[in-house]
Image (cartoon, rainbow, N blue to C red):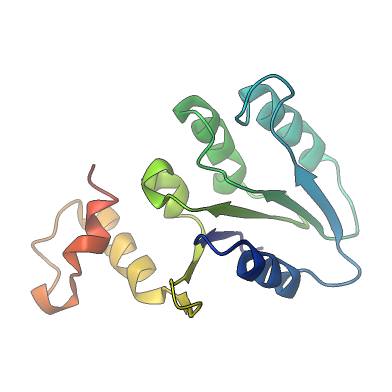
Length: 157
């Protein structure tokens, strides 16, 4: 199943998009920060890996709001879930700061941008371009007119 990263600052629009991705018969789980920390933890991700390994005939959706409040280690642990997606599960992550999300996470998610004027943009071209970059390991095989250098900056910090 496809997992999503919603990027934007308009919380109402983000909630609308999340609701549009969820069907009535889905099981929805909102993941909250650990009590004392203001971030997601590796322990939470490891527990989630175990939980999602248990089969369910219903589709489960796990929502992480403000996923940029995750350490590099936590994001790397989460990457395992995205690389080997569990059956009948998908994830919805939100952020207002795409630069704090690992490029390897971004490359495995469907990106939905909310522009300042509330437009929604699905970025299919960026996904294809990133895939070509990762395969080729360089830009020399990509025509220059297909490259938006501002978009690429997030992948080469």
